Length: 255
Ligand code: A2H
Image 1 (spheres, rainbow, N blue to C red):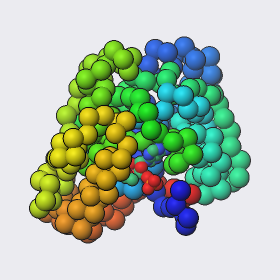
Image 2: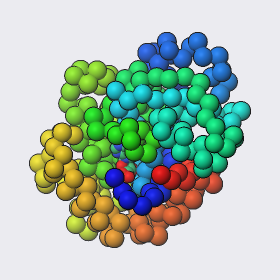
Image 3: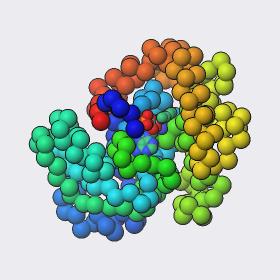
């Protein structure tokens, strides 16, 4: 756990079609009718959002659907909802209104729109190492630049039945977002291969790969996609974060 406050960019992934298992639970919740529901992911790397291929939740984590205002509802942990209530993110300061509760496993297979992603729609998938005590409990997946995301997506592609998913939900390839002198334009796949990482369970080499990917990307990386193509990651990061905030697809979240 970090000692000081951590500033995240929260990314709103709008639900376009609930998984059937989620529909069964949520159908009876009349307050959801006509509302936009978003899975909200906390990220430290807003400049990588072009490369989102899916969204991760923890199957054993309990999530809530919290009313934001008249139009919007967020799918996050209760812990995150309480934090947001004191950051002027909800219309009633200090108050949370939970419309429903649902375990992560029931939303696997839900379809969402991921802001800036090259893929128009992506799926919600399971990840073993999602912490209920960090961020929103929702992780957006960028396998080009996050070794954890790449290793997990590969597990899901190799063992769809074991993870109880449809193979099509994980059939999205990493997209080049950032070029680096040492690792090319698919940093996470490069480092996972180099370190012989076979699964999301390989925690020690994954931690090393994560460190290397972060440093190389931040200090040496160049954006190769989108409106800020050609800029360094250091220059593009705040600009892309601002684009997401201006469009209403993202906001600042502290914890
Ligand atoms: B990052 P820190 Cl491309 N459990 O976003 C586990 N991991 C979580 C989480 C949770 N509850 N909430 C957020 N995260 C992930 C992008 C990314 C991230 C890239 C590369 C590295 C990276 C796409 N996934 O993180 O402990 C989120 O993944 C490397 C650390 O607060 C978030 O940023 O430092 C990051 O971990 C926050 O981790």
